[in-house]
Image 1: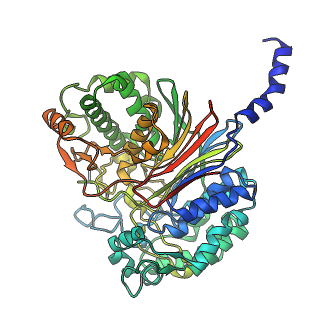
Image 2 (image 1 turned 180 degrees about the horizontal axis):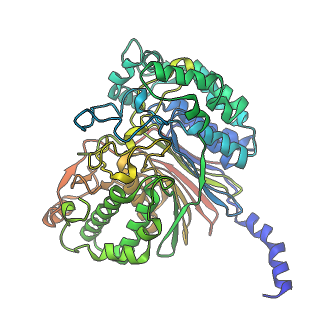
Amino acid sequence: MTQLSRLFLLLLLPTLLLAEAPGKNAIATAHPLATAAGQQTLAAGGNAFDAAVTVSAVLAVVEPYSSGIGGGGFWLLHRKDGHEVVVDGRETAPARAHRDMYLDQHGEPIPNLSMDGPLAAGIPGEPAALAHIAGRYGKLPLSQSLAPAIHLARNGFSVTPHYQKMAGWRLEALNVSPAAAAIFLLHGEVPPLGHTIRQPQLASTLELLAQRGHDGFYRGKIAHMLVEAVQQAGGIWTMEDLAGYQVVERPPLKGHYGDYTITSVPPPSSGGIALIQMLQMLERLDYAAAEPPQRSHLLVEVMRRAYRDRAHYLGDSDYVEVPVDHLTSPEYVTRLAAGIDPELATPSTLLPGYGSPVGGNDTTHFSILDREGNYVAATLSINYPFGSGFVAGISGVLLNDEMDDFSVKPGVPNAYGLVGAEANAIAPGKRMLSSMSPSFVSGPGGTAILGTPGGSRIITMVLQGMLEYFDGKEVESWVSRPRIHHQYLPDILYFEAAALSEPLLTALHGRGHILSEAASSWGNMQAVHWDERTGRVTAASDPRGEGRASVR
C-alpha cells in the first residue's frame, strides 16, 4: 500500500465508522424497570457502558433473587473503536477461607453450609465493577448512572408472580436473617402481588457508592457495617478482604464457527472455553447439514465432553494452570469430535476423569447496544435465589452464596449438580469457577449480543441461542427456542417440554440417551441483533421471564 493510500484510508476511517454505527439504542433485560432505566441513561447522553452501570444497579434492586451489589458478575464490553475487554467482577474467597471449610470431621460436606448464611458469601465484586466501568468507559458520572437504582430502592417496586415464586423457594433461608425477612417478606411470609418492596438502607449504601466510588463500599462506614454484621452471624470476612478487592480486566476468548467469530469470557468463567469447544466440535461433525435426530444426538455428545473438561481442568487461572490454548486448539477439539460415535451415546463413565441440577432462574443477564456502536453483554449473579438469604445489618446488602461454586470436595456436586476437581478447590482470595457466558457473535449476519441466567445450564442455552442465529432465525427465536441440556454428570439428557418431539425422543432413547423432561422452563435469555448490512437493530427478551426489550 502506498503512503497516499494509507493517508486516504486514515482520512476515510472516521467516515466508515460513522456510516457503520447502528443509529439506534437497543436494550434487553430481565425486568422492565431496568430496561426503562437503561434507556433513560442513554437518552441523557450516556453510552452503552453508562447504561450497563444503570441496568446492573437497577437489577440489583428489583431482582434481589438474581443479582445485587452483594454479588458479582462478568461484563463483556465492545467499544466502537474495536477495543474489547472482560471486566471480571467475580467474587473472591475471604482470606480466612480454606479448602475444607464446609466439611465435617469425617471429611463430608455439611448440608447447606456453603449455601445459607454469611459463611457462604464471597467478597462482592459488583460495586467495584460498576465504579470501574463508569470511570474508565462511561461518559456520565457514576452518581448519575446510579440515580435510577437509588430512586427505586428508596421508593420501591411491586411484587410480581416471579418474585413470589423465588421468595417462596427461599422462604426458610430468608426468615433466618431478620434483616432479610424485614425487607423481602411480609410478616415472615411471601408478600402478596402488588406489595411494594422498599429498601431505604440499600439506597443509602448506593448513595455512598455513588459519592465515593470504589472506596464508598470497600472502605469506611459501609465496609465496617458489612464486616461487623458478617462476623456477628458466624462469617469470616475482614476489613482487609474488602479493602483488597479489585476487579480484573481480562482479554476475551475468541473462537470460530464457519464464518462467524465468537467472543466470550475466559476463566474463572468456564463459558468461553466450553462454547468454543462445542461449536468447533459441531463444525467438524457437520452439524449444520445433519437431520433433526442426528443434530440432537451431536448436541448432547459435544455438551457431555465440554462439561467433562469443565469439571476436570477449569478454575481461577490466577491460581491454577488452566490449559486454555490446549483445550481450544484445533488438534484437541478434533480429537474430542473424533471420539463421538455418530450412532450411540457415550456413557459419561467411559470418559476419562471419572446429582441432578437444581434451579435455573437465579442470576440475570442483559444486552445493550448504543447508537454509536458500543455494546455490552453482562451476566450477574448472587448464585442461588436470594443468594445466602442473609442481609448484612443495616447496610441493606443481600449477600451472595457464591462459595458453593467452588468444588467443596472434589467429585461432590454443588447445588446445580456440577462436579469439580482440585482446580476449583477453595483458596483465600481465589475466584470461584462460573458458568456465566455473556457473548458476542460477529459475522455475515451482523453482530449478536446475548446471554442468559440458568446455573449449570447457562452455557448450553447460549450455545443453542447461537445455533438459532447461525440458522438465520430472528432474535425472538434465539431467546424462545425450547432447550436441551447435558452436563456430563449426572449422565442424563434434560429437556424442556417442547424441545423434543415423540419421534426425536424415540430416536435418542434408541441411541442410548437417558432422558428426563424438566418440570419447569429454564433461563431468561436477553439478546440484541445489529444487522450491519441493512442497519436493522432488533432485540428480544425471553418469554419465559418478565423482562423487556426496547429499541429506540
